Amino acid sequence: MSQRIFIFDTTLRDGEQSPGATMNQSEKVRLARQLESLGVDIIEAGFPASSQGDFEAVQAIAAEVRGCQVAGLCRALDKDIDRAWDAIKGGANPRIHTFLATSPLHMTYKLRKEPAQVIEMIDHAVRHARKYTTNVEFSAEDGSRSEWEFLARCVDTAIKAGATTINIPDTVGYTQPDEFSALIRYLLEKVPDSDKAVFSVHCHNDLGLAVANTLAALRAGARQAEVTLSGIGERAGNASMEQVVMNLATRADLYKLETGIKTEQIYPSCRLLSRIIGQPIPPYKPIIGGNAFAHESGIHQDGMLKNRQTYEIMTPESIGRSGTDMVLGKHSGRAALVAKIKELGFNGLNEEQVNLVFEAVKRLADKKKKIFAEDVEALILEEIYRIPDHYGLLKLTVLSGDTNIAPTAAVKMIVDGEEKQLSGFGVGPVDAVFNTIATIIGRKPGLLEYAVSSITGGTDAQGEVTVKIEENGMASVGRGADGDIIVASAKAYINALNRLAKKKEERTCVTL
Ligand SMILES: CC(=O)SCCNC(=O)CCNC(=O)[C@H](O)C(C)(C)COP(=O)(O)OP(=O)(O)OC[C@H]1O[C@@H](n2cnc3c(N)ncnc32)[C@H](O)[C@@H]1OP(=O)(O)O
Ligand SMILES: CC(C)C(=O)C(=O)O
Ligand SMILES: [Mg+2]
Image (cartoon, rainbow, N blue to C red; front, side, top):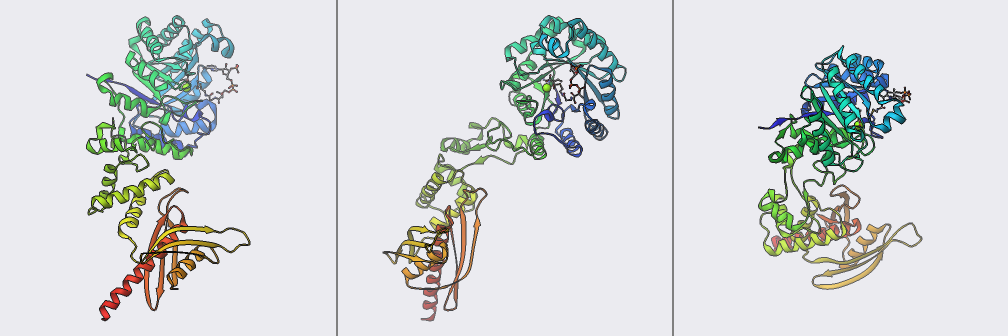
């Protein structure tokens, strides 16, 4: 039988302590509603004594969110506890979360209190909070650097005073998984009434161990995990909600612990946070990063096409993402390309044609970091469906810029099987290219339209050029794509010339 873990989300409190992650009241309420949809058990909405703005935001969240508990953080001082209660009391199930540091360092230098005074403050603060509610959490700040015996006394005091949740923070991200799980086991064993409270952990990521320490503590018997979306929080952040939850879900065989999280709401929640705080999700971030379900190398793509479990331990759909991304790039193989070609609706390509497109993809991948579906589509059109008949581009060099020299194009072409080359000038680089091509083939059609657009986003995107030309009352449209828009322009112009020539031939046949 799996045991239930409570997910305590502190994105709106510790998360907001992350530099640059400040949120206004309406943003906090919006995010709190999303956290409710996500299925967290407790939302720590803020620190009401810290400012009028924080007080009002916590009050608004408590009034709005009915499906989970809303907690307000406060120091172990009556005035802070009173303020926290005033902010949360309108909530469906309000929780007062009071804290006091218990490590020698913090007691001596920060609080300037003797251990006996700290014990007395804990007792007083928890009893004061209990006058308002039975739902009281006590946190022993810097718990992981506290003396174990003294920490056990602090925890015992808090439970006897009425705390129903005991939180052991690794405030500065100092502990290690084995050490932390041993501490949790020690407290559960040594504190006489440990079964009267839910044990919780709150881990910071200074050494990159926040998630590992949280999971170790859960295996040792902690039943609440304090986390934030995307792991934002003070300094290097907190344990990330999505990583803790997906470890428990993916390795349910090992942990045998379950949460109330609707995992398909994970990605939408982290995206909302990212938009609100204006900080993009790094691509390499586990679970929610752009690359988390992207496969680029040929061997992986081939395995994925045969069975997704070869390279995916969870599905993107399970965390609310639209699907696996088969990225075509310099490491991709034919299997992935064939799948992409079919996905684009080009079903009839033979092996030779696939090889042509494959080589073109590899060439493009040497110049461009990411190959999108649109790039492949453009390459198929270029390589297969736009095989030049009369004219083909072999080489192109263009000189242009803000100089006294007129823009110059040197073009090498194939014209009815014969190689020709010439240089020419124009008002701009495109004009120079078109003039030179027209001179080489001995024709001068009028240009009716010219348009360039980007096939995908990014400054390294391929440009697609469309031209419409006209000669003796006959018009034709041509398209060309390339990472260089002048080359794309030349390809489009030549494509239009070939189509015009084809039209002329067809008309001649009909006339005859
Ligand atoms: C680990 C954590 O994340 S703890 C939460 C951290 N979050 C915040 O600090 C954000 C909210 N904080 C604030 O807005 C302000 O610090 C306030 C309003 C709470 C207090 O502001 P000030 O009165 O100006 O005090 P200041 O912040 O300079 O110093 C904190 C004081 O609280 C004391 N203190 C610290 N923690 C506690 C505690 N848990 N219980 C009681 N007193 C405490 C300190 O010893 C210090 O006291 P001193 O002034 O007598 O030396
Ligand atoms: C207030 C407590 C829970 C905290 O944020 C910490 O110790 O990191
Ligand atoms: Mg913290």
